[in-house]
Image 1 (cartoon, one colour):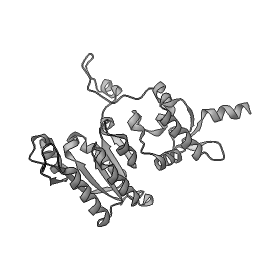
Image 2 (cartoon, rainbow, N blue to C red):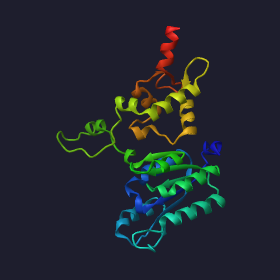
Image 3 (cartoon, rainbow, N blue to C red):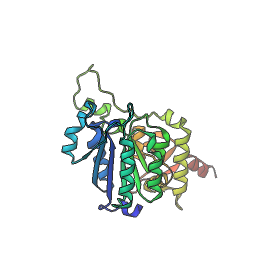
Image 4 (tube, helix red, strand yellow):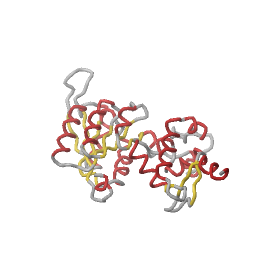
Length: 262
């Protein structure tokens, strides 16, 4: 299935929990999915009689997203989650898309994601920073919507934002000191680099990224960095060679010191 996802013709089914997702991020979500293939199934679930979903109406028409009406059968709960699960399974065994895009911050979708992946479909998740870790980790890749499509502070200054004007909240880069203290992240990066090292003692960053993708739901943008290369540099734990080219490579600084002392 991974090979199929490399083709431009890979088919993706996008299912949106509109009750728990901001309409303002749909353009960024669709742009992200377009890098993997064609999102030819687009559905948004919710009780469209609710005033809270008014912001979605224009987006549905603009992006050809099919609204799926779900009434609230029980007070305080909605039936959207169950409808999404049923439709996802139906699509899995009938249309057989190569991948699913699941937009929600609800951990209840974790068993669904695990089942979809077990059947060979990739799952790209999108949700808020508060999304529970089990759901995030179950996805092939998960992007926090808070981190997508927001300008950096530098972009605001270059755009001529007036001095002293209150800037909108933007995702900040995780500083080097904090990256180094993130034991889980450091272990993931170091293990991936070590697994991808070739005879020269260096690892192609692309190969490192593939190693990480095989192990965890990971994206450098969740740490405020546009690419894996920039995150590796920011951690100050690795050396990079041929930066800015398709041959960019990386090695653990510990390995470099060991070679010098040998």
